[in-house]
Length: 212
Image (cartoon, rainbow, N blue to C red; front, side, top):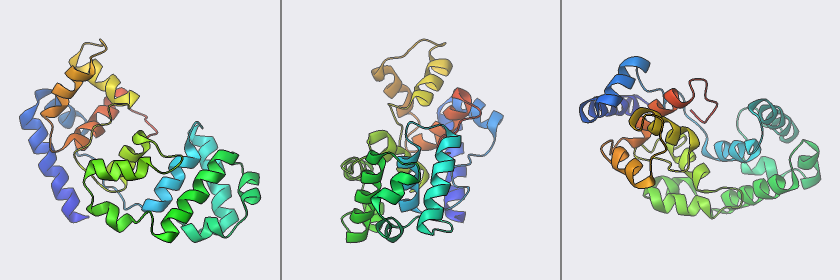
């Protein structure tokens, strides 16, 4: 973790030098908090599926029920989900779609079809493609996972409402900027676009309940 923290400090220096707007955000919000704790990758993906289209409170309640059901103390693992029936998972408050997606994810991780060690060695686009192929995981979820569970530092999620709102507010005076203009703005943040995104979320929604 010490290495990633040093990398984040390097990222802050780069962003401050490359973009005066980012320099102001870093001064305002202080050190980036992306690497506050290690996250179990399988557990993070399960939590992302459980939380889809739910409020934070409802998602936390259902996740707690699932963890109690499967006997997971800290992290849900593939064996936990494969060791209980689909009906039991449904009774914990999951929709049938989410039950199917979670069991498919557990089977893929258990069989090695989804290998997180290999995923770490993939480039960003290949990793996104592999994750996006899993039922219940789209590109946005894949990008958030890579940012917050795998500490990929050069991603900007074009489909994230909060990020686009932050860019519009800071660089477009509230006007909706085109994809082309947004990409022009974000290009100068490379290779630390994930870190820049963390600061944009602070602007778009200071009390954000996203992965960060």
